[in-house]
Picture 1 (spheres, one colour):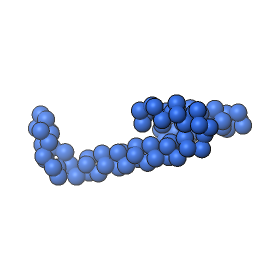
Picture 2 (cartoon, helix red, strand yellow; picture 1 turned 135 degrees about the vertical axis):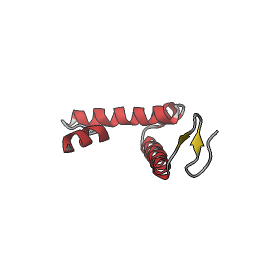
Picture 3 (cartoon, helix red, strand yellow; picture 1 turned 30 degrees about the vertical axis):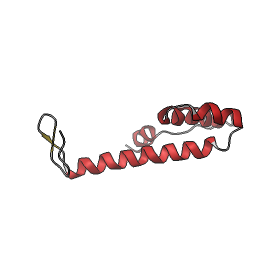
Length: 90
């Protein structure tokens, strides 16, 4: 069982405050992605909204990302993911 604020987890591994911060930031980004996906879904036709709202949050994000990529590609553009940006910067 995990202790709060940098305690032991499971097999005795200590989780540092930096690890907790990274976890928190990751969850915060995920929640923001869900919010943005939901906002975008609200702009779509009613049938699409109904269909997309039945998906789990991670599936909604994926569906919206796929849809936006298709729109961009139809204009000769492409969404750049975070990993690709980091790879180019290196």
